[in-house]
Image (cartoon, rainbow, N blue to C red; front, side, top):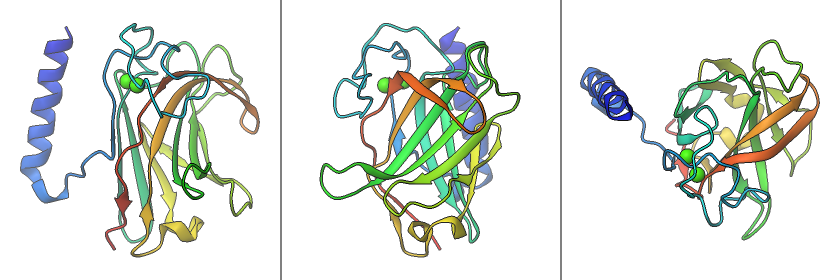
Length: 199
Ligand SMILES: [Ca+2]
Ligand SMILES: [Ca+2]
């Protein structure tokens, strides 16, 4: 079944790339399939080790890739998972970038939460939070697995800027639109490659 699915995915990707090969963005983060299980380095979920432990427990919470791209006005983030959300259990995703110095906490966190039995959401909601500069959370527009953030929301999204040391987590989300618990972490990734804004 998985083989058939990857074949379909590969064909889809080929079709997409043949339309415009130069426009197909590369993932900044890639993570193995089959390791959403709450037992990697979950707890910290910092992706520093053990991004992979073969004991599968989830599909919607199983991160495969995170891809960034942009146009003049919008930063796009796509979080690819083994199966697209929502799931019966409310799943959330965090993509964080720009550590505050070596070993520092990530300054920018993009978080999206999907409805499920363990939360009070009726539609997906998401926010960008800047834990270094502060300020109000910026709502993320969610279109399927694609997130859209206005580049005007943060000076880190300016021309020539980079999103540094991206890392991602999938977790259970309990709560409502404005507050909730983003724990436990089901899947986590290693730190990926930097993304540079193209224009
Ligand atoms: Ca992983
Ligand atoms: Ca994974």
